[in-house]
Image (cartoon, rainbow, N blue to C red; front, side, top):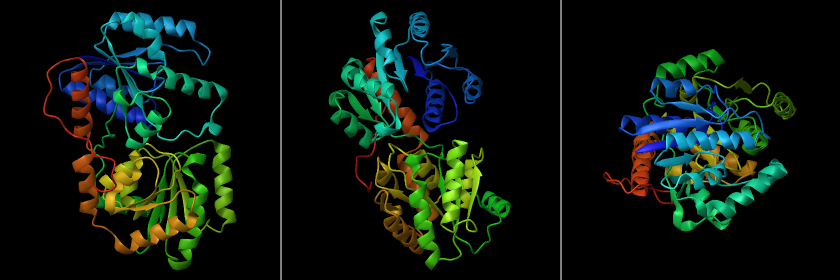
Length: 383
């Protein structure tokens, strides 16, 4: 099977990481795989090149480089002639190419479950509306969450063409590591008797740091030895505003900021608890990665977060500091076994599940022989 993935750029991000591991996995299983990017020189390109996967640059020069970009895309796809064209983002561009590829199957990717349109400009809103109308042109639509599938079907996507394949976690990379835990905590000056609670993610309003701050302040009243860390980067002005807000709430002595880390697997192991209080998720890689390291998680009831944690974490309401505070206290008190937390990810959200389930769906689409099916978990909080 010949698969061409299409994405904007291969920079660091959850969707981009999933594309890379999926492409590498399919190639290892004997398929011919290539990746086309709108914008070249992303930091993850090296991993694909090491695996022998070609990267085709469409050399897009900006938002309004439309005609030239489309012509380059058509030429490239007609030359490569894939069995499957799988877009990971900007699904609409496949509509332009489809008339020139009569034998190619078109696969769309859905990576979100909640769209806060107030955060986007008019062009995004128009594009999303068009995607809903034209989604029937795709042969298959893969959502990475049940919540994403439900939301997009409600907006007009064809239910019969949508399937759910959850993200896959590299459980060899994300695993408990006591040496890394000791090293990171020493680097940050966290004592052994202090409970370290972390929020890992980009500095973005949707991550709702304000609720985290409010809950942290309340938690300190009953657990004065707790400490908090924010891991991730964002716009400098927004970072300053968040730090000012934390300072105004009296958290400066108990909260610190470390920016983006390349050793995020080690960062997870340093935590006693991970918080994800976002009000918009599909499938959160951060939650699953932390759990793969044996770290318990308190998460808001968005996307498939409840499905990921099952009974091993705490599910709280969005934008509710009281609910988040109570969830943190409950989980710190009951402390599920790290081995049980990790086992849930290994059994249900591994890279193998992602790669094999995707392979089976694509082979079926191309009417090629299938291997043994691997079922994705249903939309329940307990598997």
